[in-house]
Image (cartoon, rainbow, N blue to C red; front, side, top):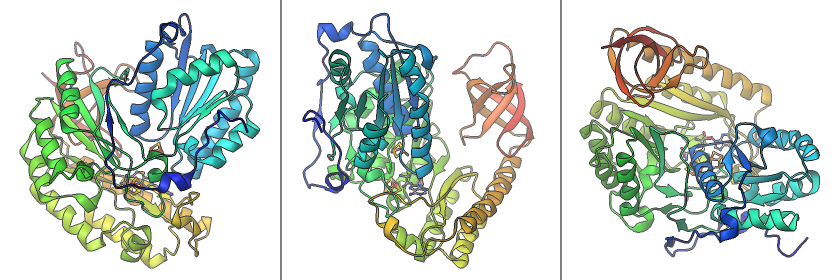
Length: 477
Ligand code: SAH
Ligand code: SF4
Ligand code: F3S
């Protein structure tokens, strides 16, 4: 292999030092040549996976635009194509490999196009080796810790016409002041922390994203203040475990403190995700209940209702602790919507264990749930556990669970009949362009007809019909 290739290693990525991560300011600089490299050229980015990737894509777009590339919605016409990938489950990987295969005809038609693969998948050595061996159409590979090097990597790939690979497997720093082009004008993602130290036994994220690094409170507030000035209506604070914000900086009640400071910026709507049940404090519940601009919606992943399985997953809470927290939230914030994530078919999950998950579901009656079949991930402890159920058994459990998801989603939605709700107008219904769509504070989708309103307005809608996945109603003038 060539010397200038830097390949990843999960073994390195697992290490955690005690030292605090560095915050690096103003490291982003372009040479005069780089500023015009993309003149009369365009870029196309396809994003997979979670909001962390969505936000990274905004940074990639920001860097490309500073290099004078313009965005195109046609992948065939693009001069630079980036696939920002996700590795959370095997089917996420398969989707990306399918897509890379498809890009071959584009490369054949236009050998000058630069095709890059980045994101969580490229943090794994076997994946990078597979791309290098099987997919010659890929020119550029870089990891989640190398985003701020995009301009240099692209310049190298462009001028040398050689394949360029740079994937650091480190804990990661905090790089501030990177350019970014936000996808929307009324809603924004705001990273409050990077990485994860929880090491749930099934999960790849601590390896692909490095250690937990909280941004400084003042840097986050500065970003939010700017969003307020730019007339943004809603922000979503992002982190794998937002509740643990500040723990790596020895802050007491870090997330509650941050949330309160953000509520006080006056931004109309604040959301956050994901909340790990482990670090959820009473102070946080108080702050969410106290501020009307903190939206009453919490994503609280359960993963399993069985204490045996939770222990095997390394989740560090019991069913009883989860339910106590859930009930406390509902009591303090009565109109709070709660959604969850559940994995079925974890190694050793028996029918009885699965029943316990259903029991918790029946208690919580979630507004929504994202359900998955366990997918063994390379280099995670769960991948080596024995007693994996048959795929048929797991599929059966997933279908059974999804029936409950639908049942309670509809039931929760029915509570909205005849209620007037505030809706942040998001755009138009995919099925019918004459219908507006938006979200309630509790994150319900609302479809309605209206004239003379704009995307980004907050309007009042009286709900007159509900379905499993959305509400419909009439604009209240
Ligand atoms: N940080 C979040 C989860 C991020 S990953 C949290 O801890 O809650 C999003 C979801 O993907 C997880 O909640 C889990 O339900 C699912 N997931 C993660 N790894 C998985 C795996 N190996 N197989 C199946 N589902 C998985
Ligand atoms: Fe993965 Fe667990 Fe971290 Fe969530 S908390 S990202 S599931 S290791
Ligand atoms: Fe996927 Fe990486 Fe997010 S693995 S879910 S894109 S952190």
